[in-house]
Image 1 (cartoon, rainbow, N blue to C red):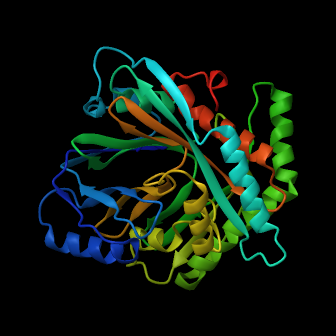
Image 2 (tube, rainbow, N blue to C red; image 1 turned 90 degrees about the vertical axis):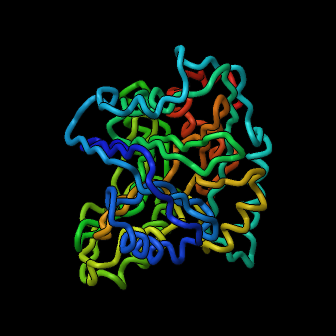
Length: 377
């Protein structure tokens, strides 16, 4: 996992945390640390989108941390993530799932539910995917190198449970911090509301200013921020958003973001505990959470698995950092599935959400060397 200031490389695997739902993950992690006497006192891995599904957390054989600005390609051990030899994989096919028209129809159905006279649903986040096939296995190391050119995101690669005998991994470049805990300090930086960036400076400036002034996007963002604040407030003696809502830029997207910081009443509570409380936020699911989740299952043609979950780490002291697993792809040999989602609220349009997801695909398509304009993306 690489941020602008640090790369954390967890190599090998000593043990795996046992299966169980997100609700008791913190207790199981604490029990794991109490019993382990050898190896790094850290668990790393991924949480699924569905809180009722098993997480995939492992204890690595060794952990390497590199501080400050650096070239991720120069870190010893990164090549251990390579899954292919003989040059870059050649792309054979890119197939949309669902196709654009089907995604637009799902958005229209969701809008009908959101604007009905007796509507209980306030927001739902719908996603679509691109299935990519290459002539050889993809290399996680190569993808991470390309993604890490953008210092504004957190680049990650984490193993997933095997499917049959095939190894899988989740690789991405997320802009969104779910939660970070250091001692008694806690931080979250939710994002919601997005606009595509442009090469032309003036056009790009207008896109950012338009997003900041957008009533629809600010309403969508407010739902997420209020949810995070309401969830964390009972655990904090002080909780605030000192900078307010600001523009957050990646190389391809503008986002509305609000950095939330707090002082915990009980510093012994772990980062995994708070990740379990917050996930899935309205930024990747919707409101009310259960109702939005049910609509996602009905309207999306695939199981999200670990997309729109969280990736990160937690140590035996409870400190850790968890990022929302968006702008990502699941890699399985020479096959990959890329994901992009958009928040649907009253005022959304099928055409607008289709354009937003197309823009969000851009970072991963670039990393794969794919021209998005040539496909249904």
